[in-house]
Image (cartoon, rainbow, N blue to C red; front, side):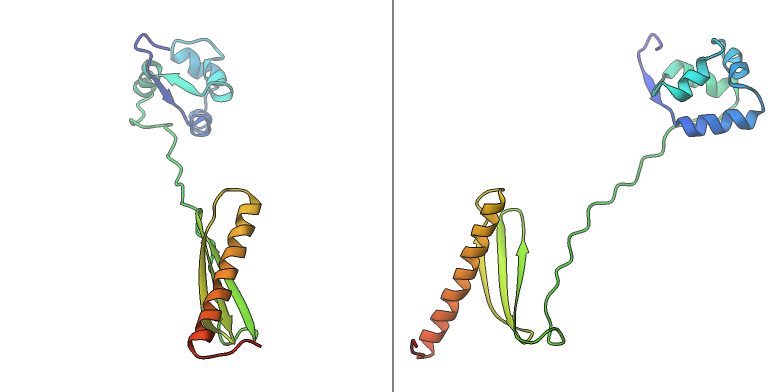
Length: 159
């Protein structure tokens, strides 16, 4: 490292491609930089960083543009959310459920012949599998209670 301690990350593949393109050996290029025969070879195979001073000298010695051999930032795409499949009328007929889970809560929707009937919600009180199952149980019980309330409100009787 140079006296200032600054280093530069170097794209080893690009550096090697450039070295091969010069028609010279890595040893010859290393000596041209005033270094030992193995300098560039070691840089390509073992080192992750190059001193800032050495990097600038490499660019000036071989008339290379600023930014040569600097790794391009990798484009990181955020994870895509899992698709939510909602039953529709063309799907299988009869009763169906959809459960949507977020980190802290759960939504359970009940459908009949593709039409939404009832939705119940519940908090997920931990991060264990059993906590998820408890939330499913609570949400399904809420759906039951909502259906029961709807039936009572309409004047229905218990069998």
